[in-house]
Amino acid sequence: MDPERAQMLADIAAETRYVARTIGRSSLRPEVMRAMAAVPRHRFVPESQRRFAYSNRPLPIGQGQTISQPFIVALMTDLLGCGAGDRVLEIGTGSGYQAAVLAELGVEVYSVEIIPALAAQAAQRLQALGYEQVHIRRGDGYGGWPECGPYAGILITAATPQVPPPLLAQLAPKGRLVAPLGPMYGSQELSLYERCEDGLLHHRTLLPVAFVPFTREKEGDTFA
Ligand code: SAH
Image 1 (cartoon, rainbow, N blue to C red):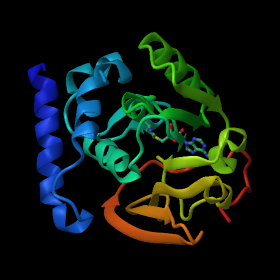
Image 2: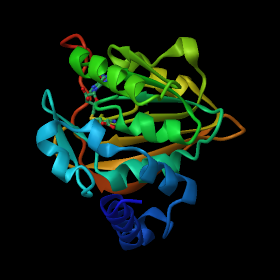
Image 3: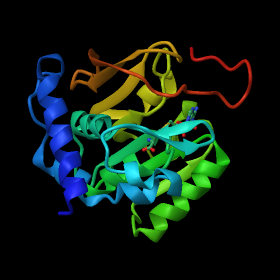
Image 4: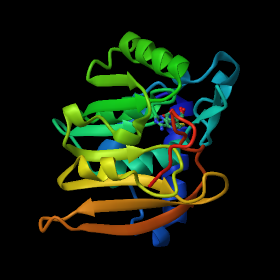
């Protein structure tokens, strides 16, 4: 492995240990770490950011949006607990990086992005890199992608005060949903929902995080 990627993995491992008490684990699953090592992050950032591609921090990707910090991508992937053959819904494709990490695990990814230019770019990029099991749709992800559900996992990668109800409805039995919940500007809590066999949802919060806001297509649309 090239030294930059090895350093990124070491940084992810170190940060995981640092927050071990808060997140309830001191390491991430080896297959998640392998997926992080496999995805060429430098292909998901603009030319001007390439030299920072493997540093453990978020980077600007244009349109006022960011590619998430590698540690957060790894943690969210680990929390989702999905693997080969599972269907996962992502709201907020952004660069397509998180979708590629999921694809490396054998997951069938359905990803929705509200900004047309980002959706188009990510689709092109993922196709060029051969990630054929990632499906991208442009639109407001509030309503999810019901035609292809239910999903074993749902990831929201933009900050929202609460989980849009249509998304919870698309979560399969035993499915997991991971999202940054809280005010759209400032600090949110990374939250995990799990649909138990009795159909009830269990919820816990894990870690303070800072994501770009979840936006709505039509002005006046709410989150309720
Ligand atoms: N997962 C991305 C990073 C996401 S940044 C990656 O790996 O690069 C958050 C993204 O969510 C932004 O691209 C933003 O445009 C998008 N977004 C915000 N609100 C949305 C909505 N309602 N539906 C779909 N995408 C949304």
